[in-house]
Length: 226
Image 1 (spheres, rainbow, N blue to C red):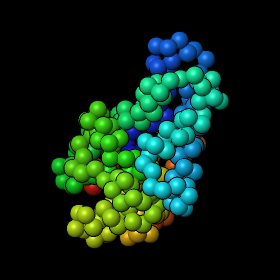
Image 2: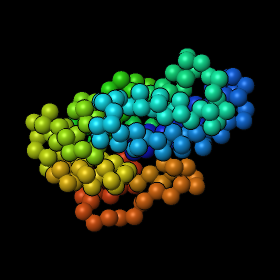
Image 3: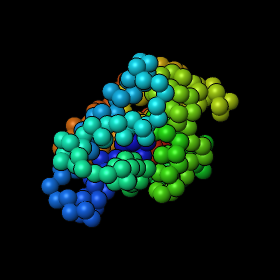
């Protein structure tokens, strides 16, 4: 979801800029805050996966990361309502331009579902706002395991009464696809060259073992006959 279906970085920057203008905060580097916020994502989940933290949903992890970053960006004085509003920016992420049309085409032929580390309420709010046409919403919260734990990938196959090889994991992140492949799923890599902004350096190179490599969701639908 984050980066594959929706533009998390651009969305956080846009929402942060609007938030700042409304409150007269003109010196915040929202791009740097978005990058630092996202950089805390994997370490926070690792604390849950290792048992250092009990099961904690992404909204709560995002809030822990945000609270730790606010002093660095001169936002220590934000009250609870503003912190909650900023944290829920992750519920309001904008889709990439091809996402809704491409997913709608795929839905005509296939069951399409999320498998995200985002919690169910986040994914539901995002889908409702952005018009994402999921048949099902699966979350790490469903299984109380964060990707790349195999329980997530195999859990989806089990809930759909499918064998792992009947399920295709679609992502713009190769570590996610490698883990899905190790669990027996098929894989499709969707390139997102702007996920980390114009100066980002995402891994877009072809890789052996990927079943499909697509430029976007429209290209993926075409390749899968939808």
